[in-house]
Image 1 (cartoon, rainbow, N blue to C red):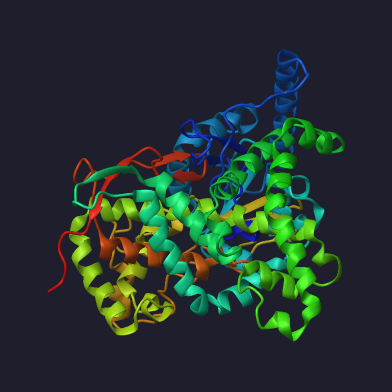
Image 2 (image 1 turned 45 degrees about the vertical axis):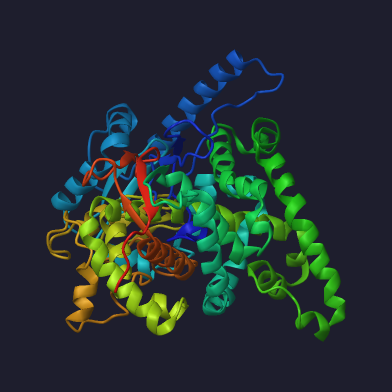
Length: 546
């Protein structure tokens, strides 16, 4: 999903750990307010360096940096949740597996007052109530998303200063990409159909077949996303799909390694101890020739305008000016878009699918709505927009089983006094307590219960359809972030996931091997990871309306 506060809405993390063992596994951004997850490689080759000496050095340096970071970042004027013993590390370590308990306790104890909780690399000040409005309305020169992202994922090194300091391509996502989703939808749905056929490969006799849901959905979303970003046939290239999927692992690994070193050696560390340079180089072999060929065709003028491709890369080329047209820079922006789009959407979709597979009683109502919309409007964006129950189903999944416990992470750029009088110094890290808000019984009746029609019932009762829509970011629904930087790609992510749910419901029967037992989520730090190894059962749909 081009995400909810994703690189422009990216995760807020301090340390990364991988759940399970393959490179295709979705990882965990831990110990920092996170809405997304990114993985570690299984192995790292340290070239000619002595691995023992390097390990000892890195451990000592990491400990020193962590002690310094936590020691310098705690804000004495903000109540502390947990203990400050050992610079807060006892609480920080405990929170890695129980962050939701801390955030719920803090929300109940301090109500709308801020509190702070140590993570592995910094103290985080969590806000709720009116203080969320402080973040929502705050200016970038006070609460900076860009600096937060650059600090936490080393973006200025992994993708370079041009990407870290100038997000001009985000305006292309918000405008050209979003405005053209209706026109692109037939292609996107074609790719959804083809990708599910290829990835599921179900027998024609209607027998049940076991598949690993998380793996299948990641590959489908990778293909559908790249159908929009770069078009056919590259979106179906097997190696390009792997590169697009795995860059998140490479970037996450690099961020962890780079965080252990001072700035002056980070370029060398990036070059010799990470996969980033080789991954960018291989990605460039696919993308740069396409960019250069399109730039050569521009001399045709109107002749080129009549036949030029209709995809995100072309919209970015049309918007680029001056140095922005450098093919190497455009290649990095294409990598960035893939980085922010694929894993967040695939994890969010997997979470929702597990609810569907665990509760077959929800399927009839969804099928009825989807069939009515498609019968009237065909497979179009208008039909997807008419699927209010599908919209509600996905939104409720994001509320109950989102992929993070916090939102709107920001770095404070100057001393500031919040609306309740809390003084926050320059350099502090703030985040909205998403878990507390989404489980507040004053906002959501029976908040711990998954109610698939929670939002569609409100629309049926006459409340605003726009306010309760999946794509709407509000202080009560923080999945997409908010303020000046809600997820730029949320309209595409929502369209993609709704279309995938609709396609599955109309064309397949699904169930879990253990009926009604939803695969257990994995919490690590502030990240909620859908089970990556759970098997689900698919078969071609056996019953049809009429």
